[in-house]
Length: 329
Image 1 (tube, one colour):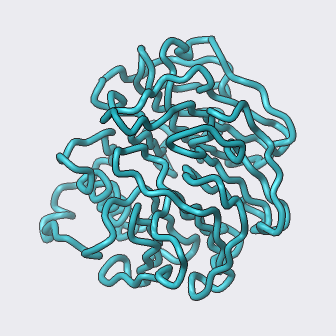
Image 2 (image 1 turned 135 degrees about the vertical axis):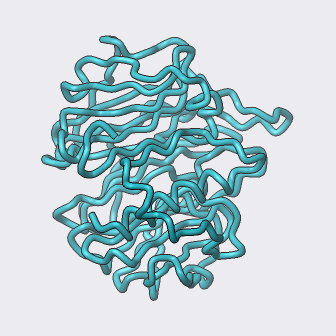
């Protein structure tokens, strides 16, 4: 990883946290240690854009270290081709502004998927109207269905096939609906199959591949509701939980016990270490919340950090990432 790309990743992490009202930091930003002299000439500055609100999704492009996309919760999709020096709005022609997820196909940088509707259930949450796709790196867009998902937490594209895509849909914020859970398309969004569904009150919030085998998938279901008369939504619906598939999403089993918390279980964020795929990290909102780690692909778990600052507003944000070169960071 180049020094410039690593710096851009750190800047994005800090910016996303800084955009949260009140300035709280919902999760720690872990960075590899460097010689301080390397940063002596750097000064923090706002790199924009200057409208769009909070950002909950960022995607880079394999082989193009200066190109990034991000989705604003009420400001559409933005793109930079010069590592953040300038940004261009590329989604303003579409009939929705709230973005919950952006994903670029690793095997084809021209293919970009967008899931509309932020999935962080604030009192001023903005909803979406389904999924979108671009085949020309964001110049034009096509709406590809899932219209009633309302809030999409993650889009995941198969690393070898840009036509295979998964969507984690949280569903309606204020009431039950059927179009929620994990959806899969094998034809680039022409058709969709609901492959993981629990009930009309439970949606999906995160999903991740095993880096060595995209047939192995982890998914987090989250049962929550945004009551209009309450500032904080109920976070611990009984439908919440972690699931795993080993056949590309055809079948799933719930992962429970063996060190994983269950009491007041809420939102779960997932990350699999690229350099050690059996190592899986979770950030868990629960009575005994915090960071959990498995070293055997989800069979057993240990709580590695119980700091409540990591998860005490887990219904609002639950993101975790692993350094691409260091499984311990």
